[in-house]
Image (tube, rainbow, N blue to C red):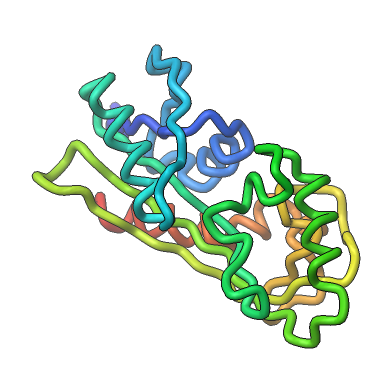
Length: 195
């Protein structure tokens, strides 16, 4: 008889995030999508911090399902841009989820910048286990490339080269990226937390 996995609702409509997270936790946690949980909600990210946005999403979904829930807010923060695009990463060029426009805008605003240091961050908010939310972070440092490199991944992956690497996230296999990415680190820590 197998061991029953801990089930969590993953409070996102972003299929890329769902696929990535499920690959990371495979066999250790059972993540179900909003659709699988019977929830049709799109929570506006109105907070100014990753933590605040993750909490908004987690609490909204938990209130609808009554099931333990984890929400993710992630973004790219560029040192020379004072942390931009930050919490606005998915809508940096105005239109939510348009990766091509976001990448083009980032390349445009980075022209002439000598300091290309950046980091990806994921903040997970877990609700439904304790009296208060639990926050878990994952971060990966790197640099912004001067041109798009690679075709895999999503978001800013073709422009981000993690420290110690010569390839962008978009040039790596999913397994390679997940082993070192911000989301990979956050979900690994979540699994450790849940034991």
